[in-house]
Image (cartoon, rainbow over all chains, first blue to last red; front, side, top):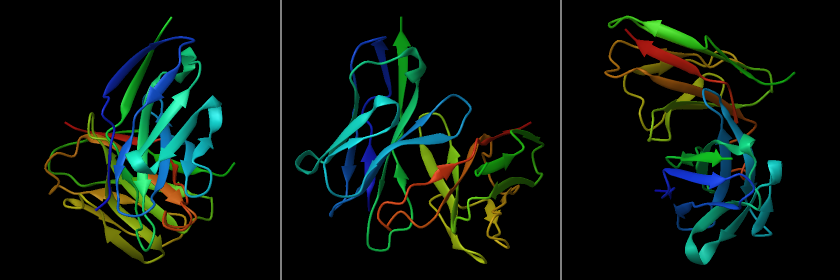
Length: 114
Length: 116
């Protein structure tokens, strides 16, 4: 069965600093991978996704993520965070060949300090 | 504007009562999903439906029921059999299942259910 781990429950970063949120997945073949962001009390918004091709994926709001098969990882990065990036971030994995659902990680809460 | 509408945003229920959460989408998506979100546990799948009049249990279906009589609607009923129903519930839809070239899901704004 597919699974995804986000090892960091909470991260605090200074405004303007770089950010990396970790995501590790477990799946035998090439997975489909997603990063979503959630503001408090709101739904989830897709930041970016990987399903094939270039392993470095660009998303909205200046985010990018890199798929590394050898490390089973799909870490999210941003070179310079803004106060508005404070939110909860979820990594999700989907699989091919008849898998009809996404599996989500437990999320990483990002706090930005001025 | 196309999107997913969940109502109500906040819902209070007395113990022992059933309650129905509404989810409507005008995106013409075939697939719809219900997730439950609890602090520190991420999103857990309750039910999903890939087509009208068909749905499947997710990972935590006990105490919940759904129907899919129309393409645009996928209501979730939280029954009295659900032992711990207080949570944030999210509805999502996608044009196809995620195994079709990594199709992404679009989410509603959620319903916060509190049992009093």
